Image (tube, rainbow, N blue to C red):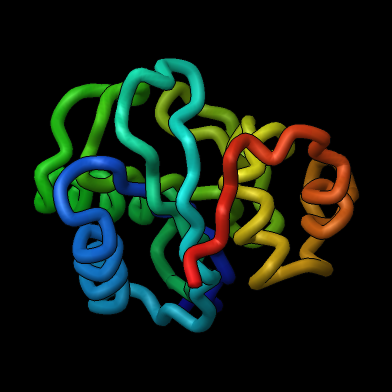
Length: 161
């Protein structure tokens, strides 16, 4: 039996009942992964095409025995089950990104780990630094707290009370 790997997932929703979408995604993830930490929820502006609704975002820490490709299939299946259609940059009920998969560095046409835009996205780094401030990025060697502190523009990231 393979050892469980610690993974970090970023979840976002900007369509429909955003809180319910996040809860439903976490419920479905919990059926296949051991979710151990969940960040606060952050209300954030959309990047790129800002002519769309604001997102609710969070990061969760989970443990899995799935290979990274299996984890990708799982999160894509959950997105589809919760009504995601279309591509990035459009409003969606749920978006689940694999941010980190242990210390693994992967670059395939389907999957890049660590997520290539972690260091420039406050909506990912702020909640990631909340759940794992001392976690070291496997490529840059910097902690999530350091990476979060280095972002000058917080991109409209507001913690929900």
